[in-house]
Amino acid sequence: MVDRLSEVFSALADPTRRAILARLAEGEATVNQLAEPFPISLQAISKHLKVLEQAGLITRGKQAQWRPCHLDAGPLREVADWIAGYQRFWEQRYDRLDEYLQQLQKDERKQQ
Amino acid sequence: MSETLTVTLPTDLEIKMVRVFDAPRELVFEAHAKCEHVKQWWGRGNPLDCEMDFRPGGTYRFVEHAPDGQRYAFRGEYREIRAPERIVQTFEFEGMPGHVCVETLELTEDAGRTTVTSVTRFDTRDERDAMVSSGMADGARESYEALAAYLAKLS
Image (cartoon, rainbow over all chains, first blue to last red):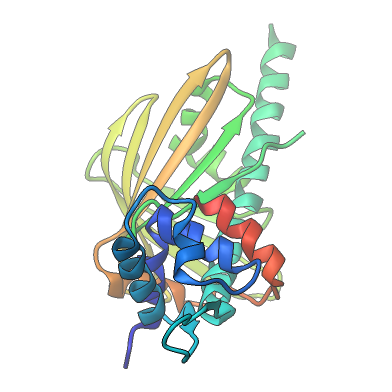
């Protein structure tokens, strides 16, 4: 079985690729448009796009000349859901710790 | 007012969480070091059974009693303890035995406030994926716009 979530995590571990995805969240774009904000070569951008494509995060149009890129939110959603769950779990835990630390400090002041 | 928790993925094998607490570092460290304290917060408001031998090589086991009657047990070993600034421990959910990750907690203090930085490192992608499929996630539907905001946060 293809380990998609691993590929998605790897793909997201790079800031340029995250920026590309954020740009594509606004709408489709060509390689040239995607490369514009970055001080790196078109070739380097193409490599990043290949990684994103392999992870299933983007699809590319068939027209040879333009091949516009589209975001495919499916796998991203899977990761986002997972992180949201993880975050919620620890938020609840740390909110409790926060309250408890306040309580401890209040008790300490009372004793003084 | 409670602070916010930031979660990022610094590498494809790690999860990093940062949270600030309005309390001195010694106190925040102490809250991690004794059952009487851990019971007050680790269970997220649920009753918690706690056993811990807080020293390098010592082990811990926490059992959270969920409102639906389910019990969730977690265990691990303390690998490194440097009061009041650093704890390295293993973490394993007994519902998925054998999948062990390593948590490193760093505590820093600035003007009476303490930042807790926790990095959870999975040994292999398989370990992390096992954690991913353990059902921690549930479905929040995201629009493209929300996804863009989320990506900006990850950066």
